[in-house]
Length: 233
Image 1 (cartoon, rainbow, N blue to C red):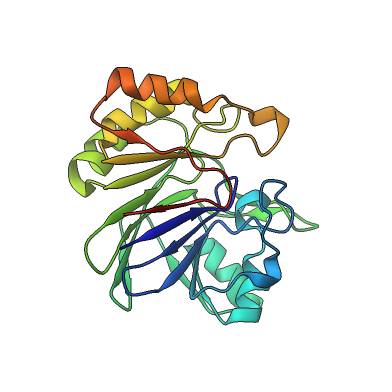
Image 2: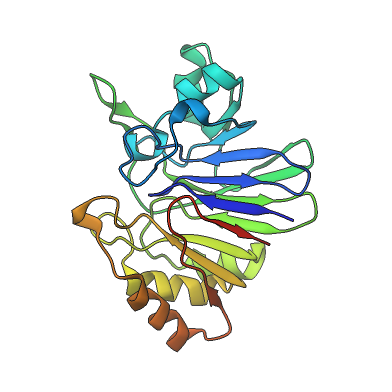
């Protein structure tokens, strides 16, 4: 069984079938939606989709304290290595194995800078991740993204996720309508919305997203989590 806990915004903790703890986009300490102190986070692996502060978050602090390995794109990995942290750089279409977990880096349509530094530097391309658990459950975390055709032709048709974590906040990412189209294209069994209601500028009514999904792809289950809640599959 895989456990997926939403920590607010785009931050998720995934506990694999065999107990490996994976933290994605660890925006914790400055995340008004997250009520878990960053000091209590215990993980084995950290995935960073891109360099923006609300996704890179507390990656370095958590890695320093726990010894977790950080996975990101090549540019993010180079930056982390210069900070003395253990990191693995990847690029779009590549896969690696951590124990028996397969991690595939896929595309996203967004921007990426390390914007939390005094002097902002390029952060490479934004990414998404497909995580395949030991028992074969496929979880797709879209990162920050707009709608693009490869969600259907590549992510949906080739990789076939079981669970999709998709942004719906609009302004900086897809809104509810676009995210419902993405849901139909990707065609998971379950979709969980993210990247909304953290700040006033991305406030959304999740019922609108759920209704769009119901109209476009009624066979797909929409799961709405509150920060701190867990979905098990």
